[in-house]
Image 1 (cartoon, rainbow, N blue to C red):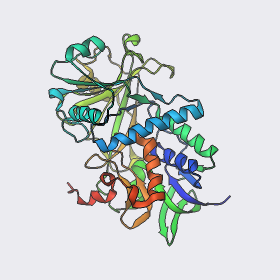
Image 2: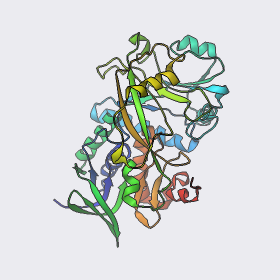
Image 3: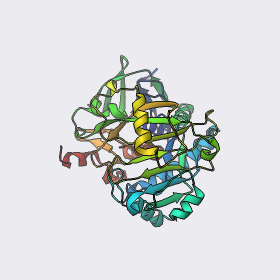
Image 4: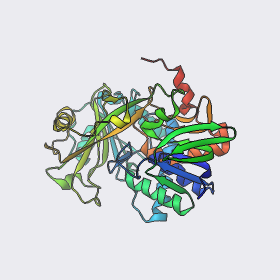
Amino acid sequence: MSNTADVIVIGLGAAGSAALYQLARAGISAIGIDRWEPPHAMGSSHGETRITRQAIGEGQVYVPLVLRSHEIWRELERETGQRLFEACGVLIIGAEGGAAMHHSRSGFVLNTIAAAQAHAIEHDVLSIEETRARFPQFALSGDELVYFEPGGGFVYPERCIAAQLAMARKLGARMETGSQVTAITETPGGVTVQAGGATYHAGNVILAGGAWTPGLVGSNGLAPLTLRRQVLHWFAPERPQDFAVGTFPAFIWLHGNHPEDSFYGFPIPDDLGHALVKVADENQSRATADPDQLDRDVRPEEAAEMHRDHLVGRIPGLTLPQVRSAACLYTCAPDADFVIGPVDGMERITVVSACSGHGFKHSAAVGEHAVRLITEGPAAAIPAFDPRRLSAIPQP
C-alpha cells in the first residue's frame, strides 16, 4: 500500500474528519492519521452534544462558516441516514442588558443580535416576561437581555466525526488510526510525516491535531496558544419532561461580566438513552502545559462548584449530585479567534487550530475551508484567522 498522497490530514477530530471528507469528496487523494480511534474522548470533540448557533457574537466573520456547516450536516444526514443536527432552538441570556463578555467579546448578546439582523437570521429578542412564559425552567433576575434563535440547537459531535470519516473512506480516503505522529518535515516539493514507525509523503499537510498541534510544529508562531482543561456535567432533573427537546432549548447564560460568569447547557436528547441534562462552564484558569498530562478525573467538588456558582437560583430543576462528569481540552488563542493557515517557514502545512472553545459548530465548513487553502492558495484565506497574527499579540 502506498504511503504517498496529495494531502495528509493529521488528527481526525472535528476539523480533521471534515477536511478528510472534503478532500475525498473533491477527488483529492488523502491519508488521515490519528493517534487514537476516532471519534474518541482524548481531545476536544466528545461529550455527546455541542451547541450550534447561526448568529455569531464572536464576530460576523464566523457566520458563513456556521451556515455552511449546517448545510453540510444536512447533506451528511441524507447520505448516511444518521441524525447529526437538532434544531431545537438556542437561548442566549446576557446580564447587564446584554453587555456581558463572552469569548473575549464584550456586549456578546448585543453582537449576536446585530449579526442576526445583518444576515437575516430568524430570531426573537424576548422580554423578561416572554422568556419566563416560554421557558419557565430559567429563573431570571430581571435585568437580562434574551435572544432566541429557532434555527440553532445542537449537533452530536461523535456522530458528525464518524459520519464524515465513513464518507471519506467510502470516497477513497485512507485512514491510519492508532498511529502517533512523531515528526513533520517540509521537503523540496512536499512534506514527510513520521507516524507509527512508518513514513508518509504528500504535497501538503492539514494539521488538525488540536492540543497536540503546537508540539508538532515547534515554536513556529504558535507559542501564544494555551491549553485549558474544561469539565462537563450531567444532572438528573427533578422533572425530565421539562427539559426535553422541544420544551427546553440549548442555552448560553452570561450572568456576570467576568469571563467565568457564564455556563451553557442542553435539553435531553431523545435518542441517547438517558434523561440527563448536560451543563458546563468555560473555565479560564485550569491551564495545562502538556495535553498528555491532562487530569481526566473530575472530582465531586468540581460538580458541586458548578452547581453552586451557576445553577443555584438560575435553573432550580437541576439538583446535586450530578450523575456523571467528563473532562476535555480547549486550545485557545489569546484573542479567542481561530487559527487556520500556514505558519512561518512551513508553507505546505496548513494548521487548523485553535478553535478557542467555540469551534465545533463551524467545523464542517472549517474542514472545507482548509482544503480550499490548499487548492486555491492565499486568495482563499480569512485574514482574521491567519496564524501569523499571533506573533503581534503581546505575551504575558
